[in-house]
Length: 111
Length: 114
Image 1 (tube, chains in turn blue, orange):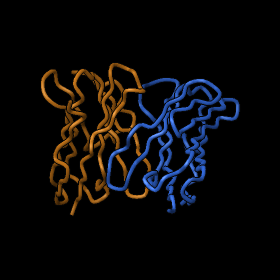
Image 2 (cartoon, chains in turn red, purple):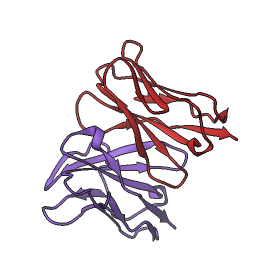
Image 3 (cartoon, one colour):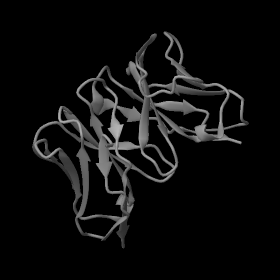
């Protein structure tokens, strides 16, 4: 079983819609969770992090964490074509400072 | 206000040669991480270093791969006797102490082994 799993997509949404990206993780002791965006040929850039159960909002982005279900999601409201990218879910295990990454979900926002 | 810097950005090696990848962390960051991204795959953790110390190398292959972060100068990821399967993007990230939310990535080095 992979430490972090994501639906690889591709996920297509029309401009202005809500994009919903999902991620599950296997280590119940994981404490911190991150979403990165990666444009083709570029490096990952941090969008949001969340540590506590519930929702965390930052502009058009909302991260949701449910530790009981070992599930973390990212919602992108009012999606824009510039949001088209691969979104990587990253989880910090209970021990160590490195991240375990999912394989990413490819998102395309259609104008 | 330089971010994480990596060089070279692209590196071509023939099988059996050595590859040296360099990473200069963001100013004020003392922790460095190396990740490898194979085509169509996610980022895989390789090694985590602080100045002059390897903290966690559990993701790094036992043979041919080594990493260092000297007191002065950049962190180096060294791959000896490269094989075609080493072709990948190698990303370095740095953070302010162990503050994961400050972990920022460099632009990566694309290694191609012919």
